[in-house]
Amino acid sequence: MCYDIKASLEAQLSKAKRRGDLQAIEEIKRKLVPYTDLPIHHASGFSHPKLLIYPDRSPDYPEVATWGLVPHWVKDREHLKKFWNNTLNARGETIFEKPSFRNSARNKRCLIYVDGFYEHHHYKGKTYPFFVHHIDNTPIVLAGLWSEWRDEESGELLVSFSIVTTEGNELLTKIHNNPKLQGPRMPLIIPQEIEDRWLDPLDDELDIKAIQQLIRSYPNDVLEAYTVRRLRGKEYIGNVEAVSEPFEYEELEF
Image (cartoon, rainbow, N blue to C red; front, side, top):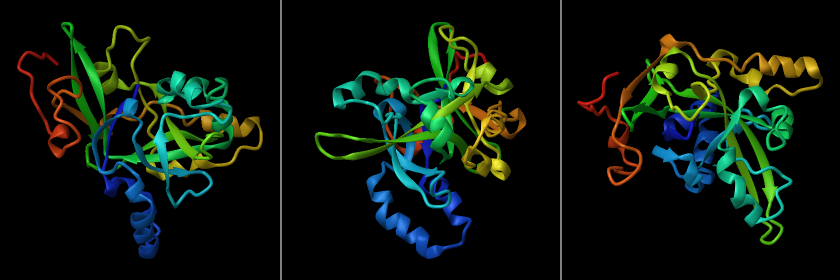
């Protein structure tokens, strides 16, 4: 699963910067970034942070979105609160089937650029957080689904997203060993050279199959991981730079 991320402003803007439009970059920084929670050294999806996503309707220009997808058919705020924490991740194998995700899977896909993500390893009754990132420290491109929901009481329009997950690769199989889950998982990482395929519009079942073919484990040899300080409880130091720095646990055999 993917419930914890690191997302710097530099990583989040990496796709927009490829266009070389400096005016657009300054506009994003001025108009959008103040409404996000960036920089995110560590954030849990359960706190529903706001960050930038690149939706299919504007592939090169990001939008501010809240983590935790809210389908358009949600009735009100109370209805939203009952299941919001259950839509932080979307299981890739079933996104075209599940009521919460199937509309977005067909019509509203997005990319999220992060520095890396955190996963917990279980060992002798305790959990140990690992930070997973590219070996060369380039941004990781996560596949996502997005949605728009309007609060009828306030009139507020909420843009939200979910991170798609897939089967864990060899590295994540070793780390993500939660005994309560059925098999290791990892976020769906899209190689940069084919990232825009995730945003392609769908016309028929053949297009759906093309999207499904992208839902696979990411190569093991381009990622690395190391343990970091606790991300939960009294030992958590908060959203500060040091939270993603290497930290060793003498008792951990890994």
